[in-house]
Each structure stands twice: as C-alpha cells, then as structure tokens.
Image 1 (cartoon, rainbow, N blue to C red):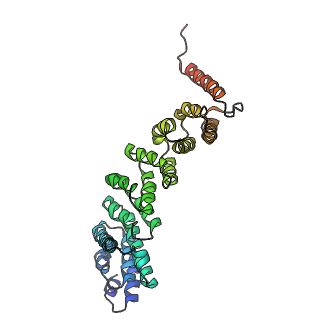
Image 2: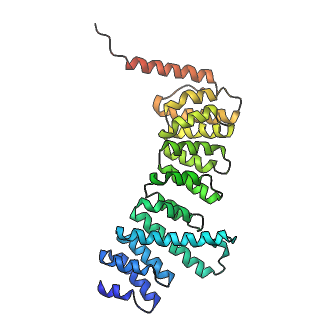
Image 3: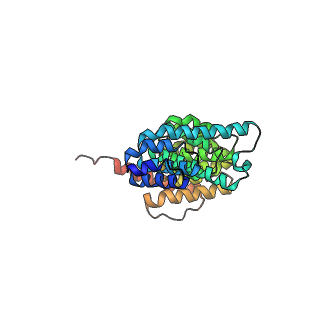
Length: 304
C-alpha cells in the first residue's frame, strides 16, 4: 500500500497514473488523501485515474475536491464563451489534448455520482453546457437527490442551449414533484422539447396523470395528442373519461391515440370487451356498465 502511495510522486506520469488506478482497485481509504492531491497533477491522465479511484473508494472526503475541480473547469469554459469564442468542444484544435480533458471531466462526474452527495447536482448539470458528456451527466444525476436543485433544473428547461434543455427534461423524470410535472406537461407544447418531456412523463407515470388529463382537456392539439398517448402508458383508470371525451373531437390523430390508450388501460383491468372502435357513445356505455358493476361489488351485502 505505502509503496503505491509513494509512487504517486514518481517522475514518470504513466507510472503515477498506474499507481492511482491500482489504489482505486485496492479500495483502501488510506489512499484517499494522496489521491485527492493527485487531482492537481500536471498530467491530465493522472487526474483522470485519481478521480476514478476516488469514486471506487467512495469516501466522502473526496466530494469537495472533486466538486471544486469541476466548478473550476466550468468557470474556465464559461469565460471562454463570454469572450465570444465557441464552446471548447469546437475551439480546441488539439484532438489528443481535447480527448484527455474530456476523459478527465467524465471521470470526475462519474465519481461524484458514485459518491452520492446532492451538492454535486449543480456543477454536474452545468457541465452539460461545455462538454460532450451527456451520458455521464445523466447517469450521475440519476444517482443523486435532485430535489434540492429542482429550481435549477426547471430553469434549465428554458435555457438557450438545446442540449441543456433536453438534459433538464430527462433528469426531471427522477422526481414526482408537482412543479416538475407541470413544467414537463407545459413542455409538450414545445416542438423542440416535446419528445424528451414525453419520455420523462412516461417514466413518472401515475403521479403525472392528473396534470396530463388537464392537458388532454385544455391543451393545444399537439399537446393533447401527446397526453393521450402518455396516459395509456400510465395505465390509470382515472384517465378513461377524458380519453372517451377525446373520441368526440374532430382530430383523427387524437382519436386514434385515445383509442390505443383506452385499449392499453382497459385490457388488463377489465378483461375482453367488444370492438368499440372510435365510437365514443359505445365506449361511454361500456364504461358506465363497468362503473355500475363496480358500485354493486362495493355495496355491502343486505342484511336479512
């Protein structure tokens, strides 16, 4: 153990990188402080291996140093953007150096996700603006409690960068907070964000039903179509009356989506039924019959 820690100070960067990697595999907490120091190594590959090792060891001492390194990177790239230069994904003309820097950022983000400290949500989310590491950002944020930074993510839905907006929409799938659900249902009106918002609402499921029913009744035709489809995946009987009402609309696409969702919701809950097509009156009669049967089942047996 001690020889490996001492090797972190070797003159050869590849030797230092190998030592950092080995210390992560061993997982001994005595290596945490030396690995934190290695985050300041002059060679980015050593920093990358040190960050990976700290994530593997999973000691909370590493949270603040890793966050500080990520914040510093974000500030540097933000400063470049403020000068009118393209974001670093495009202005770095040294492919080798660019790749090393990107791998370092990915390692830091992954480690912070493994460490599970919610304070890391903001710097991780900010990184999406400057680095091609969407997969790592989404995976890390999926491991963290996002509730404390909900306002940050909600604001991200209206960011000027499409990448940031899509990331915010995807991350919000991890909460059933009413503010997040309302924001995602509102995004169904946004052509550029509709697909991501729809996916997240599908993941949220039952808690989003009330808001989706409201959109189905009152939203734009594009949002209503999307809401009709999502409600089928949510599988809640609460949506049945609104979906039947949608069959009375003139829009054929809305009718088709409503019928598909009605079949998805009802096939498991109520068993076989006649082919009702898009006939709202037949669906309503069928639904009234189901409701009456349920009421009779719920009534207590009469006492002689």
